[in-house]
Image (cartoon, rainbow, N blue to C red; front, side, top):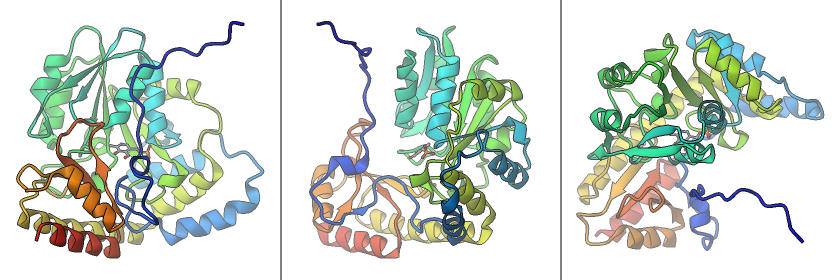
Length: 359
Ligand SMILES: Cc1ncc(COP(=O)(O)O)c(C=O)c1O
């Protein structure tokens, strides 16, 4: 009997942090760059109120949430599209732009989902070398050919934690052909407060050939509800609506996303927590010669080349203290682990554990 055959999927799968280690009882998960403090209490209250309505479909175009986003960031609600995570925005944009044989340029250690979606739609993915774990505009431009459709960049980038300055980002857009879509992923921008840095949205909201993405999974603490959005020209967004699954953002995500955006106090608290702990942890890592990125986001990419113990051994020792970090095998960054900044107790335990490992 001949059975139905799905197409052969030859590219890598996303491996989540927890799947790398199932043995720990009650692990403290510092492997997915989730929020340290969780969501705003206002978001939880909204969820509670919404529960009686879950037998009704949600809005199909997330219009109530788009209105709040539009007011908060002073942008056109008609040019916003919401998705089940910013993941879905990457999916839609690749689906829309890529024809088999087209090329997509991603930085060497760029966020993994870009290449997964680009490959799904049969693009050829070209990786632009980085310099000292930072995206290089020259290398990106070197990879561009007549077939290039999209360039993806997260700023700051996960997992490297490095960023491109405002001038470098402008320079990148200027040097790319105008018919190449530049996707700027602002997932961690709230954590980064440097004079030479500006978010993708602030830099490019008036450009017709840039798509900016934002997520509710990081500073807003709603990773489990899957919510993100994209902003681009009316033409691009309109076409994305044509292929968007109906009701792609559920009621729980919509109502809590709205409240999370409005709770400025909670956002401030989350940023202050992150700033405080990223400084503390950064100085502890320095003490033990663990090389890492400057604090730019809610995580550190730690390199163990200058320590006596390698990343795999450190991983196992941290696991003994129930601390689960992210191995970087999938990103092919040798001898490194990624640490997410957690709540006070988890961070204290991490620091204590590092001190005892390297004493
Ligand atoms: C750079 C970057 N973009 C996007 C995401 C995913 O966001 P979402 O949860 O909205 O799909 C992540 C999550 O780790 C990320 O690191």
